[in-house]
Image 1 (tube, rainbow, N blue to C red):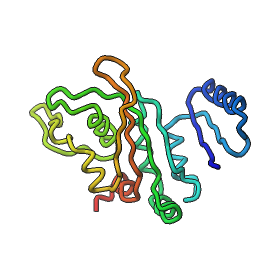
Image 2: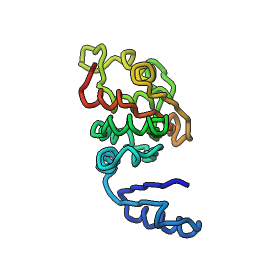
Image 3: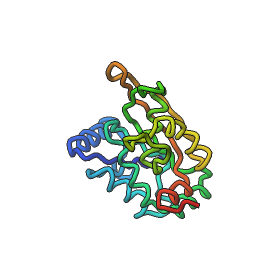
Amino acid sequence: NCTVLANDWNPKAIEYLKLSITKNGLDTSNQFQLSCGDAYDYLIQLGTDRSAESIPDHILMNFPLEAPSFLGALRWWSSKFVLEKYKQTQRYPRFHVYTFARPSGKDQNDEEEVAVNLVANELLPVMGERDEDDTLKTSSIRYRRVELDDDFEAKVSTRLVRDVAPGKVVVCVGFSLTPRLIRYMQGDYH
C-alpha cells in the first residue's frame, strides 16, 4: 500500500516501466506516478511543490555515474515540510545514492568511505587544509561520514553493490535528509 514516484530522462525507460507494471498486474492509475525529465529538476520539485504528506519516505538515485551530482537540488527543499513529515511519521526522508568508487591512492580509504565523501562533498561545502597546488589534502576530507552523522544526524549507511571493473565498485550510500542539513545547504551555518 504505497505510491511509487519514478522519473527517468529516457522515454524508453518509462515505456518499459509501464510495460513491467502492466505485466506484473499492478494498478497503474493510483499506485504509480511516472515522469520523464531531468533528475535535478525532478528532485527540486519533490521537495518544493508538495506538502509534508507528499515528501517521499525513500528516494533511490540509481544512476551511479551522476547520482551524487544531483544532490545539490536538495538545497531547494523546504526544511519546514521535512520537519512536518518527521512529526507525522517519526522518520526523515531516506536517500539511497548509488555511485562508483575506487579506493583512494595515498590513504587507501576503502571504497565505502570514498563513496560517502563523494556524496558528502555534494551536500556540504568541502573545507580543510590545502596543498601547495590549492587542492584539498585527502586527510582533511577523510571523515565526512562522521561529520554527516554527528553534525546533521544523517545516519549514513553504506553497502557494496558489485564490482564493475578492477578496483572500481558500485556503492549505495544511504542518508537521512534532516531539516538541519537542508538549512546548512541553504547557507545557514548556525
